[in-house]
Length: 408
Ligand SMILES: Cc1ncc(COP(=O)(O)O)c(C=O)c1O
Image (cartoon, rainbow, N blue to C red; front, side, top):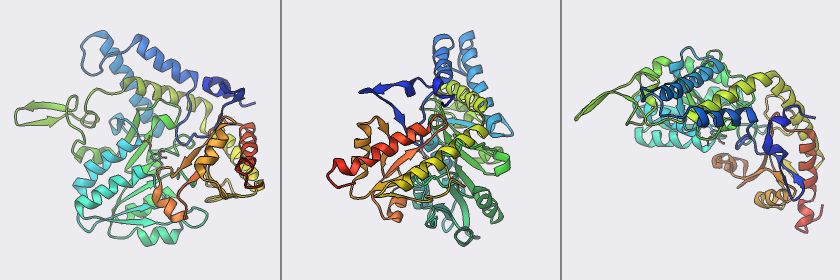
């Protein structure tokens, strides 16, 4: 029995007498009561517009918001709380870097290097910068196991590279990219690095100083927190010299009819009323993850992934993309297809057993083209999943082709 299951009310739910088997954690995770209660408590007792009011409730809301920022800063080892910018999600964090850093510090002929496996949220902002500034996009291509080889990294990151944008963990193949090596290489040629930790921070301890990345983006909702809160970490000296991304209330120091001066960090990048309830939820999620412990999360997930890869290997007519054999340097994200069946049909048939997986291009169409497919099915694990969940997935998958009259 997984000891954490008890904390997640939704995982006890049933449909047509079948318990929910939730295997879409790379899309969003579920919430423990500790997070639900923290958000509920904030709205019941502490809600007010932060940074504005001079009355007690607003001061309390401001304190809770800033406490959450401090918790995030400590969680990832930031030097200063002001290096933590709250955003809506990873997508907004990546856009902030592209609009504020990319448009102002990249120039014609500069090269932006990124893996072809990136999520659209870490491709489209750089396409925008490339078009606006005449910078060139250079893609790195993974090998058959989904990994970036040293040769590929060293041939793409060159003296012309000014920025490297890369996911720590692929949301399609589950590959853990060798980001420390890539950051060192990028810095050796004077390029900045934007690390997308949306799929890694739920599973691995992130230490911004140890990694040395210039920017790190992630979403709360993929790590037990509510939707609508995300984080951009940036090195203080870089954030200082970057202009605001969004403008308006809260981010100014002084405004007259013709212009404005801006608030210091982090407010310079937090225009408008912020998501205090979300930040409180993120603080509670961090506490929960720390209580479970990344070591425990890692052990549980490695065991589940090895078990799942074993079960997949037994399934005829199923192709797993990326590394189908080893749980090493790989996260519990398994993309696959069933011969002759569209991924949407697979997901719909699995849903009749209350098994929830994702099907589609996973916001990674360039990778889909590279893999030679339009779409895949994706089962993604978190520490609250169980072997029984994987057995339910395998059992349901076994019946897919039969349902469509294709034979087992
Ligand atoms: C690797 C990666 N980056 C970025 C995102 C975007 O996250 P969000 O939609 O929360 O902004 C996702 C979402 O699936 C992702 O997997």
